[in-house]
Length: 327
Ligand code: RIB
Ligand code: CA
Image 1 (cartoon, rainbow, N blue to C red):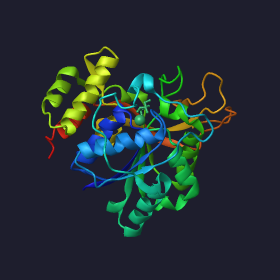
Image 2 (cartoon, rainbow, N blue to C red):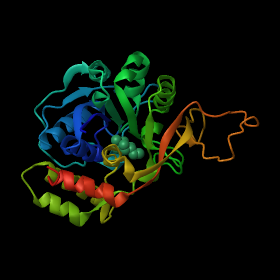
Image 3 (cartoon, rainbow, N blue to C red):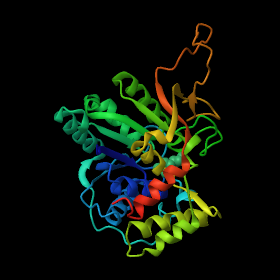
Image 4 (cartoon, rainbow, N blue to C red):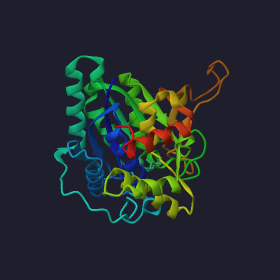
């Protein structure tokens, strides 16, 4: 069965890896891509996303501009990770196309309500947020009826263990903690299944510099060359001989869910902590659930938290797809 998917991105080097995979894998039907400020300002994210979809041979996919900044926090970027232009400073020819005139939240609404109108489960959309959750929070609070068109949400964000943006928080959640808290709360209200592909698995699927150079050698300014250049950038930036496929791992978890081991666990987002703001607090206590002594009680949201990943399998899925081997 071909799965309808929508990605929400802050393209970004690894978002670009995820976009190539989602646009090219035969088991996914990429319906739309919505953009949000995060790794780079939202207009740069839109430009990068259009460019990546051109390279993937998918100019048909709707791209929409969304939130410029988080709900409460000021906008920051991640140039120290993704380069000055936000996508690896590749000097890659930019798309001449423009985004859809609708706001990202409207494109999400329209796409999900259309899916709901079909009335059969095969039309339901898997929403894959790979960025701060600002667009998704705005969507679910403004148009809760879209839940009827959602199969599930598989998001890259959070962490059970350590963070990356800070010692305790992962970038996407740290960038907009209120949005993450709203999404978890709304999904509990609306009974939307959620899978958290967090840092505990995010860094494990990796591609070597040698494999990247083979991708680049395909040339032709196509998906394979772009994919290889993205990995090469990361290897150079971090002085490493391999790089994570990052957000693309969350797309692999949609393609092949058996490649991750997840547990359904209560999760809260810390909004107040001085040193812990933006942390996803994953409750892994296993003493039978007697919470009478716990003043916090159990979190409203219990979601599927990825704890392990078949990293080699996911790296292979990505490589086979972006190299054209999956066609
Ligand atoms: O913490 C990793 C996340 O932050 C990824 O989505 C990456 O693209 C950055 O946005
Ligand atoms: Ca991202």
